[in-house]
Length: 219
Image (tube, rainbow, N blue to C red):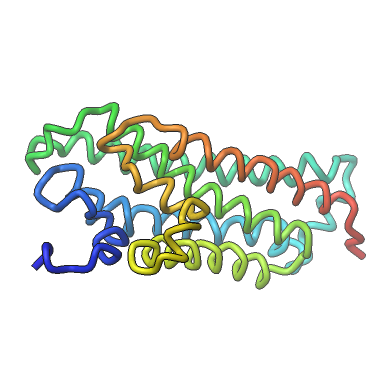
C-alpha cells in the first residue's frame, strides 16, 4: 500500500525513505506531523500573546510605564517562549531515547535523536518568531496567529506538492519543512539545512519585529 502511494504523499508523511526503518518510521509518525505540530501550537499561541495579546488585555502598557526598555521586555518574553519550547523538546526527546529499546529503535543513536529534536525545535521557533514579529509590529493578535500559522501551513503544503508539481519542486527549498525532512536529521545528523537555515531566518525576523515595536505608538 505504501509503495503505491504518490511520492508527494510519502514526502508529506516524512516516509520518502520508507517505513520499515527506525528513522523512516519515526519521521512518518512523529517528526513530520505530531511533534512539530504540538510545538507549533504552543509556540504560536504564546508568541501571539507575548506582545499583541498582552497589549490587547491592557497589561502591557502598565509594564512599560516602569523604567524599562521596550526592546528588553519584548526580547525577554520571546526568550522565555523559546526556553519553554526547548524544555518541551528536551522532555520529548529524552523520553524517546529512554524508550528506544522497548520499541526496538536501538539503531537510532542519541546523537541522531538529539539532532532531530533540535531541528524540530528550530522549525517551531522559526514560526514562533514570525508570529512574535507580526504581533510586535502590528499589535494585532489575530494577524500574528494568522501569519505564523498560515505560513506554517502554506510551507507544509508547498513541501508536499513539490514532488507532484514541477513548479513547486523548483521552489521547495523555501519551505522550512523541506529543511527538516529532506534530508532527515535522523539519518544524516547535524546538517546546516536543518539547523542553520532556520536560525538565519528567525534571528533577523525577531530583530525587525522588535525594532518596529520600539517605534510603535501604543496609545
